Image 1 (tube, rainbow, N blue to C red):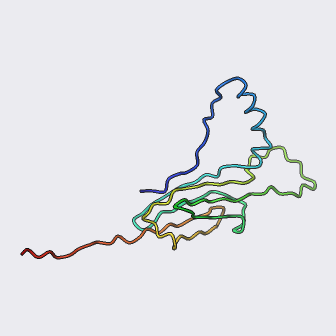
Image 2: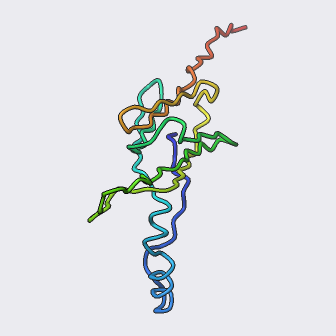
Image 3: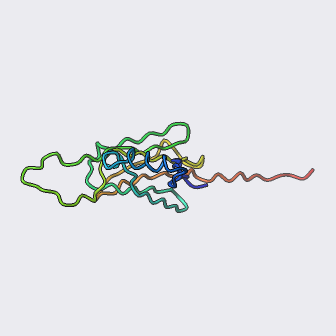
Length: 142
């Protein structure tokens, strides 16, 4: 079993004209500047799972990782540069704001040995698998 995405998203299509207007006014640029969803890659080999979260421009202290009831939640906030002296932005395509991604962790993961590191804009979370125990015994025929 692999780590599964936990986040649930609403359908992106409107169900009525009034919901189109609501979506237009409620999901404004201000909201999109306050939250975003970083890209996540999940890899697996025989020893571990790896979760890679693409979040450039952050510090290690900007992340929160929480494991509760088999659900790993990775959250944080990427803040926009406040100093704008002499700068006139023509385009801002970088995502800023708070984010949260959650994943169900398989029972085969040694939760007490989970590690996280942040380097070059990539948060890497290592989830080591438990060693497979082989129950082998000799059965005597009587």
